[in-house]
Picture 1 (tube, protein in one colour):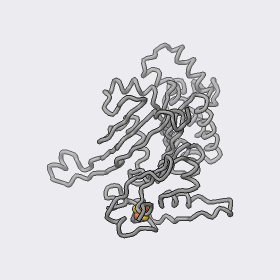
Picture 2 (cartoon, rainbow, N blue to C red):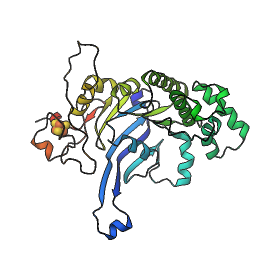
Picture 3 (cartoon, helix red, strand yellow):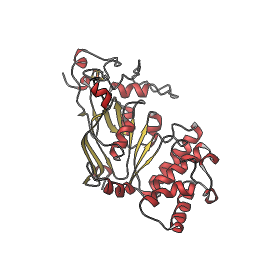
Picture 4 (cartoon, protein in one colour):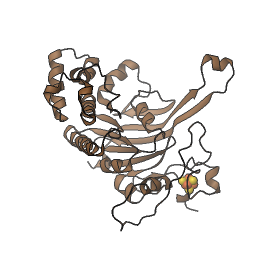
Length: 332
Ligand code: SF4
């Protein structure tokens, strides 16, 4: 079976998440207007078993929120999540806790995500305890094997987070995510808080673990260089929406959406012979509390025309396994 024929491990359809702000009882009594923040807006994608889907976008575009909704750490406002053939969108808390064994997350900040009062044994062994494994010797043996497989020594077992470097702490976070042999792992900006030299080590480790353990990753980053290095397919997010998706190689070498082109243009090039179109991104990401009408990217797009300001483009197929949402790409 080719990779394209592999059935999806995860399928997400029309997923949305809206947060209502200013919605306390006092604010309602004072009749203050309720502010709606649409963090994720009708997003659909799938991830095949064994592949890495890269999610790229600027800070605040909704990619981390999307990942947390997929894991049901946040509840979706609408849409559907199917994991390994089962609809888990409304799975009760108890059944979801059991399923979490197969769906794990590696957090961005290796300083904030580890409890400073707990030892490595307690931190990495906690998911086992939550799943009802209580034999201390079993937990200890599995934690030792796990921390060794992420490149840490067994004598670190009783040390505390402050005794480790940033890279070592992220290895502890990875061990905690993998201790229950998950199928799907969300890597939420796992290297952005680390020094560049350490980033390369952690990325190599994640790629090696994926191969050895047959993992499937959703890899989130705002760095298109990192995303290009790890992903089989890429989805580009802008203000809560996916604006382009496609196989990594074609998306990076022949991007179609102006925003993807702008992200790629922001990466310094060493090879001066590469002369692909460069698109300059100006201004900041608009507030998701009042997103622009029409195409949400129109306030920053150098190709904007009248239609863009009033009509939102739809994500349409643009080639094998590729799709993009832009009026420019539509036949006249
Ligand atoms: Fe730019 Fe218009 Fe395309 Fe949006 S729809 S990306 S504003 S050209």
